[in-house]
Amino acid sequence: MRIHARLEKAFIFYSSILLFSAGCSTVGTPSKTVTHSQKSDIAGNLPQNVPPPLIPSPSPDQLKTGTQTKTVTTPGNLPKGKQILTMATLQGNSGSLAKIEINSRPFMRIPDDSSIEWYKTYFQTAGRQHFKVWLERSTKYLPFIKSVFRREGLPEDLAYLSLIESGFSPRAYSYSRASGLWQFMSWTGRKYGLKVNWWIDQRRDPVQSTYAAARYLRDLYNEFHSWSLALAAYNAGEGKIANAVAETGTKDYWEIRNTNAISNETKDYVPKFLAALKIAKDPSRYGLGEIDYDDPLDFETVYIHHPTEIRTLAKSAGITMSTFRNFNPEFIRWATPPHIPSIPVNIPKGMKNQFLARLSSLPELSHGEMLSDQGVGNHTIRSGDSLWTISRHYGVSVRSLMEANNISNTSILRPGKRLLIPPAGVSSRHSGHHYSSHHGWVRHRIRKGESLFVLAKKFRTTISAIRIKNHLSRNFLRAGQTIMVPIR
Image 1 (cartoon, rainbow, N blue to C red):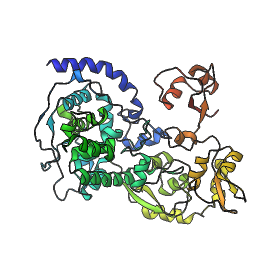
Image 2: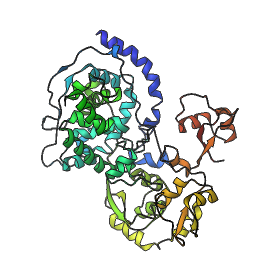
Image 3: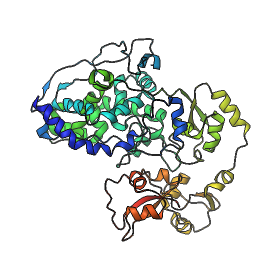
Image 4: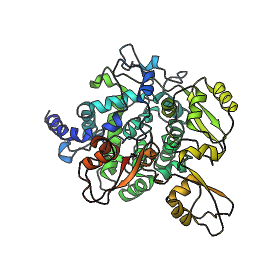
């Protein structure tokens, strides 16, 4: 009982920290009088990025000493024939998860560890409201994720890893520049076939990123032959976990966890996942009843073979722009990439023939026509031109030029070839800010004497809007600091 008393006191302190993670949760549930089908239309232009879950760690004096290991059986795959979970299976009349008949199958060894209990208590108390929003959002993607994991031979319970990675938000973007449902870093995403450039970030595509996550998790398990170590490697990187195994001489994650061979974040990662998994599988048992689960995204994927404006794709699919971006958060500009010959697009199920027919009836726009009203121009390369001289001439960064044209700094610029020139002031880095630049926000370097109040007045916005956009936890600004401000 004393441990719970101490935990509750600690949660009072940590609850203030969790208020900062509300950005990830505000995409959650509206008033109950609004139907799920209306959510995206009411939202209008959906926010481009939100921070991922900020879940605190317990301090050593908040935990019981000692770890007794025991083997626990956790639910595994669904019975044969139950291929895709529907809302009839997932949801009862009350809106809470109905009990699903499943086979019991060993997934991973779970110790009787105080960290797991700490996180279970945390998700029921200080983190309760945020956890409910993540659960509500989970059913939007879970049926598809579980079907992919089944086909890849992975335990279905791994689908809940997205719960602690992103709160099931494809727009989650961390300070370390990890993105999407599965919080891929750009190089890992590219390694597993995801396109990440100035035009598109498929780490945010719930379909393509899930296939990539399944392959990555399978590779990690094949390397370590332990799901605990595989999950730790998903968090820290396979190199760090391989070094930890070599340093400690054991392949038992729970033994490695008692050493200094891995970071505190990685020590907490598996307990955090196991606690979230237990509650997510039976939320009513842990006091999280009356959850208003989102409807699953009912979609199919179609490939298009020429660059097209997003508004044209939405119109061809017979849906609003906000609904289209809800299906396709990976498109971070106004059009599909001009240099990729085939690109997947997610549309409502049953719309494929109509979508392709409408699209084929429209004339294909030239690059110039497509880009003329977007502040994007063309430059014909002349003898002696370099990326540096071109970037200086147009006031854009070299990286912006490289990413907009899918070239590297070692590429040869051939005279006569045309380059796309992105708008000046649009950041090329895949940070949480650059996605929003085209939607009315630009970078601003803080000058001496400027405050949030001064900036809010100058740019006709609110202090709160600037703080949320830049993830500022305090009002202090430093001269020389760069933040995002709205275009006047």
